[in-house]
Length: 394
Image (tube, rainbow, N blue to C red):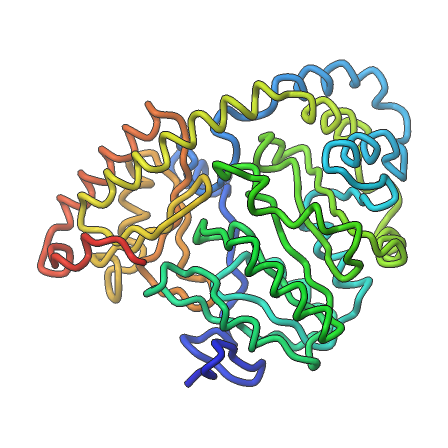
């Protein structure tokens, strides 16, 4: 049994968390092509449904003539642009080869002995922590509460911890926590002398991103590290560009020393600066997601599925017909119809039957919803027709 504060010790297990394999990530198009011989509509990754920022695309193309030059190892122009955008000093910005690179550097720089990570959440935190021999405790998010973070986490943070990691909005659940709760977590971390890393890579998809970010607190809190990237909101997954905000300059210097010097290409730096200016691209994405997310949720709730609340550009669902001996059949059936979704059964604390589905453009979403309805109609049986599976969690 887990502790009453929701925390599972590193030597304890619940739902197989301790021995769960690191989750594979979405976007494995090559495996899909090898198996099916054509390109899918990829709902397994949660990026801007309109793809790469047009301004970034143009800037990268123009910068190809300069690709024979070494990139600026300190990313000075990009850091100045990011500092201006987020209201911090350039010295408080670090850039990396995507968010995953910065997670690795952050962990190697701190060398923590014990950390607290939510479950379920993005697997790269735990993967990086275990690489340096860090013991990982899990704060179990309750599906009955829609996987929302709650005040129990305050009691799960104590002086034994060196690091606490939060994903806001969380992946794969899509839910975000109110800023007052996050501020309480930060205060608790500071009183326990541990560092709080908040991954805000999906913050840009929120209806009101500014209402939930902790970025305004960076200058006054050295134990706060904010992680973000250009991968999601600007559609630059293949370009690889992430950044972090932190006022602990010694930590940032140590992070900079934890990898090779030219880790951010010149093309990525140029593309990132251009993307920051592409206000129209972000507005188009917001207009789409703010309408399509609730529309998709409402449509899925009419089917024999459990649909969880989400504030981001993806939805976590549970398919009762896909549990037990039917594990994987739902995703396989959709793959045969040309849709790639994210099987979440290898996220810590989740089991077979959980899937994450991105929010894309209206016409694509219509096709996916039709395919899901056809698959479920073909799988119809006692397990898929229980009235309780039609209700949303939380």
